[in-house]
Image (cartoon, rainbow, N blue to C red; front, side):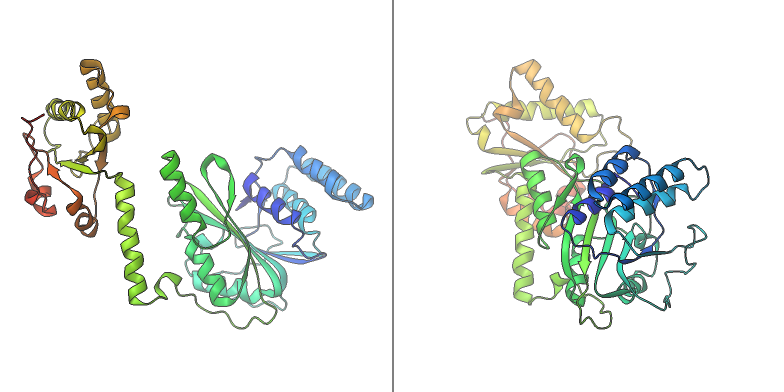
Length: 399
């Protein structure tokens, strides 16, 4: 639990919007330390340029210099407290953490927390995912935040294998806010090298990811979500959220489900003429390469090649292989370019890998497959399971 450059950027964005109450009472759920990936000169510069009162500025800079000269374990926690002074100008700062400094309250956040006061700002920067009883954790955040107060959350979204018990999806935040009447003041997430991206509605993240995949062929594989909630002045007891996607009629549900099936078309970049091949990857790779070269060479000379997409099933591709399927296909295209002078990626046909699909996805895909490409040595089990055997076989003897 640390203030990295991303948390610092998040707090900077919020501070620029002047949403933090002055002389606030702040509570950290998980005591934060200074990670160290921000040059300390950045913090000094922000203190110099953003603190207007000269006496306060001098005091904080002197305090920072004193802290930097220490070698005790609390040093990195006290640097964070200076940063919090910059952003919040807090009146009091408290923390709950079983493994923090001796200043932190030693409460187990899996259980209800009894305190004699509430706070203007509560901070959960990377704590909730480590708490098994997430229901109790977010009820505690709700209960300890004053009416009209702010709740700041940063939690893992994608990646972070074994970092904690949970990753939290975008819908979690929007449904939590809706159930409890929170105002979503800010919603940002990490998007690869782009940094923080802000969205304004519950579909914003998935729209961004879809556009990134469609337009740039990229996926986000490692990301946190950063959210600021404002609690209503008349907020009542904590309410358990129900996922908004399921708060719809059966007809709306199936219409949305049908929309998700369409995404299979986009994912596989289906065209007017779609063919599918089911190599048995248990064979030697050089035999599969030779047969697929023959097929792709034939399709590469077809007058309708730019209207074609050859789907190659890799459902039984061996995990022990020295190359992955993408490298195999890249080698295939390169071999054909060198031997036949056919530039497959640019001139067609399209070649697309098909990994494990659900039965419902195959049900949607099957009517759009015009031909099955026969191979010597096929994955017969997959062909039978997916019903591809009923699809017309492409005559490789014809141009």
